[in-house]
Amino acid sequence: MASRADNIASNLNLGNFAKATELKQRIWFTIGALIVFRFLSFVPLPGVNPLILSELYSQTRGGILDLFNAFSGGSLERMSLIALGVMPYITASIVVQMASALHPALQALKKEGASGRQKLNQYTRYGAVLLCAIQGYFLAVGLESFASQQGLQAVVDPGYLFRIVAVINLVGGTMFLLWLGEQITSRGIGNGISLIIMAGIVAQFPSFGSNLFEGGRTGAISSFVIIGFIAMVVALILLIAFMERAQRRLTIQYPKRATQRGMMQAERSYLPLKINTAGVIPPIFASSLLLLPLTITQFAGNSVDTNSQFYTVLQALNQYLAHGQPLYMTLYAIGIIFFCFFYTAVVFNPEETADNLKKNGGSIPGIRPGKRTADYLEYVLTRITVIGALYLTLVCVLPEYMIAQTKIPLFLGGTSLLIVVNVTVDTISQIQSHLLALQYGDLIKKAKLKGRMR
Image 1 (cartoon, rainbow, N blue to C red):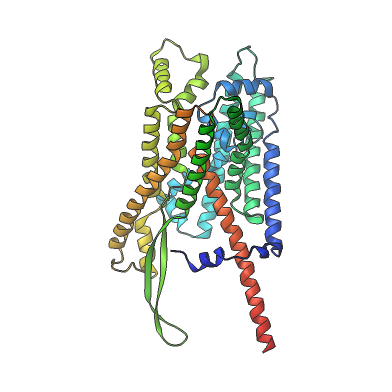
Image 2 (cartoon, helix red, strand yellow):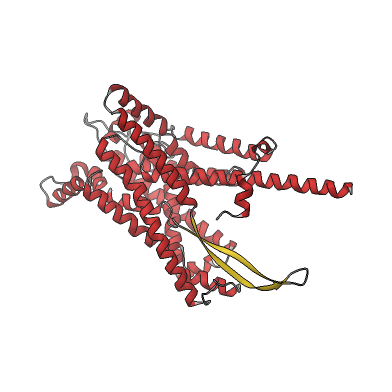
């Protein structure tokens, strides 16, 4: 059921876009900031040989690095100043969010309002700096230990000086991206961090499209496969756009209050529960865990004895957990479903929501306030999470099955599609909000002019 604001937004006059000077400035600022992000992704770390690095990266494909490289727009593959991207900040924010739901002191901060959220954001930034330093150091050590087939080193002058310089540059690059994202959020349009991640993913679309159609031209990929793949992507985009906006609205009724005319009127509102409350976190967690054995094998290199039992176990895991294998897709689906329920339980607390409704005098019709309301909210949330988990599983497993059957070198997974469509829908919604505010402003001006004429 569409709200009044949705109905007005659907009938917006796009001719007002020419009058929206502030909106156009925000859009141009966002585009400029994203261009700066793309330029930075081509600036390499000091002391790294790009030619040897590209050869080394081709030997370590298929692990967690591919996932992070997709989110950073290829910056990790080129080992640029922003090779870590904003993933340390995302990881730190998830950790702080989970800790705030479990730790009493952080729970108290969360309930303090704006000041509490500001402190939690500060803790998140501290955590992001710490994660950047740790990841940057191990990345520098890994670059020093890697050697190409010709025996050349990716690092020109390995040692502690290179490690210190690499950590400083990587931490500085990630912090600059966070600052750039905050500037986009405040002075641009949309969520800055999300737009940076989306820009990194979208930047790889042209190369993937050219490789796909080149394979069709040479006969390596069938034309029917290309048409079927395009149809699958379009269908998944439509499904994601529909499901991400889908909500289960619970009617909230408040006590009768006196109006200006002296009449008693009961107020009603809605408590929206998203079908996919967990967002894109479950696929990221599930794929990271499944790709961990392959990543360990790649980084271990020649340091692990090939005759040891540990090496044999890792090789067996890599064989059965390869992309497209039945065991991999089964565990991937189970992991997505598990993390959907786990993360939903972390971010949404039915008891806290029921207490807030009770304090404000609100209640669900037919449900007693307090524990009965909390039980009802948990019951409804569990049912819609089942639908959300099945939807996420379909979106993420279907591309994996497509890769296994057609052998297309596909980087565009379900997680990438989820991020791109989510951020696009959110940005368009914000643009509609600005146009809606402009339209209301025009109506107010017309009403004032009519009042003066009278």
